[in-house]
Length: 177
Image (tube, rainbow, N blue to C red):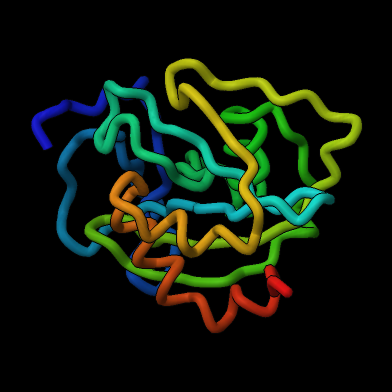
């Protein structure tokens, strides 16, 4: 894609392939030696109505105007679940309990160790707030329509592929009658 993704200055902890912390800082956007990875989380959020949250990426980001699930990099000093809670709240305003996150996949993609989670959330007393520089829209779709929706051309392809590879783990969590 020709669009250059714009990011604020962020630091990540560097890990080896087995997720051992290397005590090295990684800076977003800078090159680093092969064998150093940062952790990226992706979250499938289902509300009390059995609907799954999708967000639409800002047009200035890579895959701009594509739909995705909530996600982002774990920052320096954060543990994975705290990073997941932070990303969800930053991008959507929704607050979650890190004890409710169920791991569904782990996959290495370029310099990222992607860790996928599923969680259910009660949105009744929460307010949705879009993080303007990250997303431009959101929607809650029926869990029965989730797989069909992500298989369309307007969903981030590498994220779709990770979800599909994890379907055996995910399907019982979002079982559609």
